[in-house]
Amino acid sequence: MSNIHVNTTVNGDEIGFLCDPRETLLDCLRDKLSLTGAKEGCGTGDCGACSVKLSGRLVCSCLVLGAEAEGQEIETIEGMSRDENLHPLQEKFIEYAALQCGICTPGILVATKALLEKNPDPTETEVRYWLAGNLCRCTGYDKIIRAILDTAADMREAS
Picture 1 (cartoon, rainbow, N blue to C red):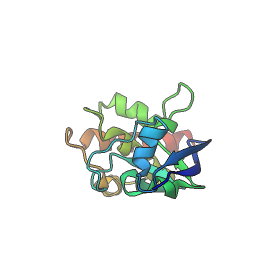
Picture 2: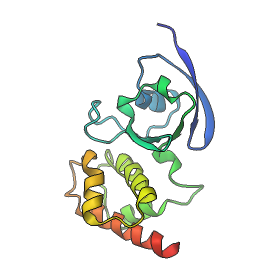
Picture 3: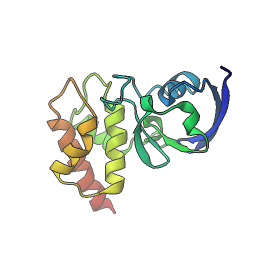
């Protein structure tokens, strides 16, 4: 099977790449574009480690074909910070020590950013429900939830 050319926007930059039509978006991001923030935890869409936004929709990039990115806008963890400034969520995750091994952290951050864009004032239950598809094997989630709720409060206050 021959490779196909895909034109897309990744973190605001127009990009083209070649991929096998059977190749996942996760593999294209990591292997073709050297964007290694999204991780493959399971390969079946069960862990959320590979979460990215595809034209505004949160997806597991291991379940999307790279070819499906044609004409789409992709947002990855690499696009979360601007210049040398971390996103407020990233700062709070550091402050609260809400990460350990780091495999799940990029997916959780991308998912949480999507949540706060949709709902800037989530309850703890809403945060836990939203992150139900993001598994972490190292923490008990409490630091993650506290960091998210504190970030949401800070962002609302800054608005």
